[in-house]
Amino acid sequence: MNITQQIVNGLVLGSGYACIALGWTILLGVARLVNFAHGQLYMLGAFVTWFAMTKAGLPYPLAIVVAIVTLATLGALMQIAMIGLVMTQNLTSLMIVTLGLGYVLQGGSALIFGGNPQTLPGTLSRTKVDLGSLWFTWQDVLVLVATLALYGAVWLFTKRTRFGSVIRAVAEDPKLAELFGINAKVVYLLVFVFECSAVALGAALVAPRSPILTSMGFNEVIMTFVVVVLGGIGSIGGALAAGLGLGLFIAFFGAFIAQAYTTAAAFAVLLALLVIRPAGLATK
Amino acid sequence: MTAIESGSSTAKPLLRTTSTVLLAAIAFLLPQLLGGTSIAYSTLTTIAIFAVMCYGVDIVLSYLGEVSLGHTLFWAAGGYAAANLSVKYGLNGWATALATIAICIAVAVFLGAVTLRTREFVFSLVTYAATVVAYEIAFNWDAIGGSDGIVGIPALKLPFGFATYSGSTQEDLWPIAFILLLLTLVFIARFRRSRLGITALMVQMNPALATSLGIDQRKVRLAVFVISAPITGLAGWLYAYQRAYVGPDMFETYFLVMMLTAVVLVGRRVLLGPLIGTGILIAQQNLLSLGGDWNKIILGSVLAIVLIFWPTGLVGLSGRFRKNTA
Image: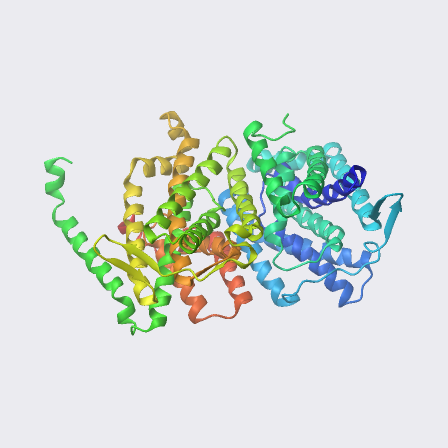
């Protein structure tokens, strides 16, 4: 157990957390919406990828596209159903509705994909890269590179294009934005579809590392919560830094203290932060 | 209360009290009326226990207007307290119930205090995360049960000094579940008329007015959350005795979705709403079950559909009973 290997493991874990949390960061930070079905969407993204590869025999890149398209469609349907609650900014009901829809997804996935644990096939996650005493897989490299690229692209998009400011205007006051000729419903729809696509991509990239189960959604979201709150709720750079930092913390905690209680440790970090800085680390 | 007030309303409260007592008596005899079979007793006991579980969430959701996703934690805390203390230390029902209340209040104070200064969805998020973490601890920590849980919980014993009531069968547990439900209903009815209940409603309906009256909204949220926790906890406490087994499955999302659905199905801020909602949902799951996965789809869909299409629930649909229960 050398320190450098743990740093590598931490970056590997952390880039995964940041990758899965990207959609939520945008949804919550930019559009001020919540989605408690996030964990189940992650699960579904992983299973659609698995299904496309093992049952339909598609290559990995095509399977990723299938997962993104499936979840984007599902996200659009969910958002169309919830549009009334979204336009009235009824966060309480939105939280409960997304939780209920997540439960539907869990039951539906168990019906379609069965109750057994599965592993995504793939060559990238099986090929090790050895650098002296250090090792990681090509899948890990892919996750890290893809995460950095995605965060960079999203940051540029929200800060440098007109659409970025349109989204922020809608989040600030949907009614006022509509007076200025912006169709707030379409903006919300696009942001939600982006969230679902991003989590599908995250799942397709991250899930090959470990076995997948249809009941895993409940536990998967907690790291996303920690990353988003730690990063300062909606700060894109903050979420990336929080994801990588959390990954490093979990890697060291798991290696040197207790592997079984890593989620509890992440939660302890979240609570400590809420007491010290209720608005998150990256407050303006 | 002044003489004029009490004089003008003696007839109606008397009628109201009589009908309430009569209804309670019929409810108590319901398992007998349904044939007196073991299944009738166990189903109605389960409905009573689950209804109490839902009332904990009901207080937070209906009167405060916030979403606690952490009540599964209190539910499991009650179960684990009852199981551990009765199996390992041979404590009776009163002691395990007191321990349940103490643990639930302590956890709620902690979670409520930590999220005191944060935005409302952070409260939901932290309570959700707390449940996941508690699940992980319960699953890995063998001293309190570990992944296997605790089997062979002894019959519920409630000593009354001169005699001990023992709830060893479903028939014996029904009176206890019934009394727990009745006490919960009385508590909720009093809460609705209490200062805290009215303040909480004001915070939900008109935050600006509440602030202008000098009400600290965060303290109200903390107080309501703390008193709601032991209610769900006591339901979990009785559930442990009913099943004679406690395990990490008490943390399943099912219970959380069940609590929320039972509250919104009939309508928020309706005294008997969660009880009727629980009855409908348990009846579907026990009598018209389509299998575990389909039941998940039904339960989750009911929750989403009600909130999207009729936010006021079944009561809002009919709209007739609203005035009577308000």
